[in-house]
Length: 116
Image (cartoon, rainbow, N blue to C red):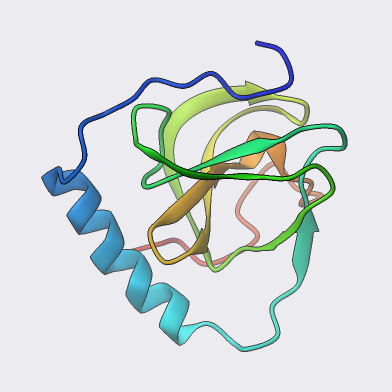
């Protein structure tokens, strides 16, 4: 798999993406202002996607050494990364998700509320 997460592109504007955007907007708006920030795996550039799976569109790539807030988490596609294999996806901004397998949270389970 290399240092970058494998990608599969999906057409923009799908119903699933619209639904994800709506539900995560509410979670991000309700989150406290000072959330802890978690580091992505050292040496990795991690793709940020519009939903909890590699078939969702990439919106940006996090640089090496980035720390991210986690507003909520949701189950999705199972991904193997430096921190194991997980089906959890972390919502880091409105409509933006990264695989929890690339984020050091200190836990194999939920550390934030579930996304609606």
